[in-house]
Amino acid sequence: MLRAHRIAPAVATVVLAAAALATAGTAHAAAPASHTRAALDVTCSQAYLPLPDPACTPGATNPDVTQDTIDSTICVPGYSTSIRPSSTYTNRLKVQQIAQYGYEDTNTADYEEDHFIPLSLGGNPTDPNNLWPEPRYATGTSGQSSTDKDTVEYKLYRAVCNHQVDLVPAQQAIATDWTTALSVLGLG
Image (cartoon, rainbow, N blue to C red; front, top):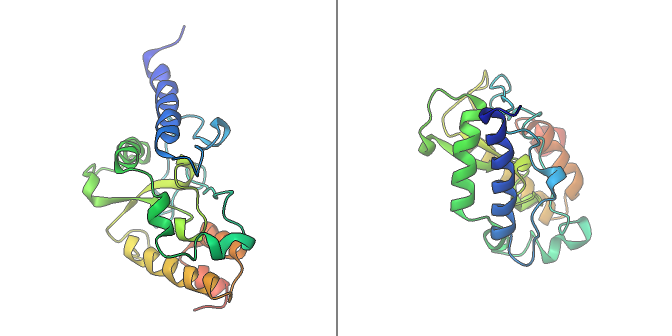
């Protein structure tokens, strides 16, 4: 017999998939069901902070962005804004994910619903595997915050668009550990 606490995550998965379809626009289809978080009742660990739990947020890329298309996608001014999902979608997801991560502080203003692989590096805009509630305050032993990650993202974006670094290595470096991504790529 199914219990209510097991049905709710399944319903939430369907709602998230429908929301992704509604907000993805015509240029970017929603992530296939296989890419959505399979079980929203998963408890995500805070032990990785300032990184997301890799089991909950492994990252996902946008298939429309490749090394061959960077000059007509991510390197065009306004690109990220043009594909950013609606705040209705990300705010709803943020509330669910704050609960999944078990954050004691549940004030949504204290978290950025962050694209783990940023839109500016070809991250998927709507896939829940690429979105997580990143604390705006310093976390982990490094004491880094979302502002520090934003700085790394911008430096990687500039390096990719200036053809100093290829797209896939930049995506891999930020998804592996954004705190070391610049040094791994010889940029910092």
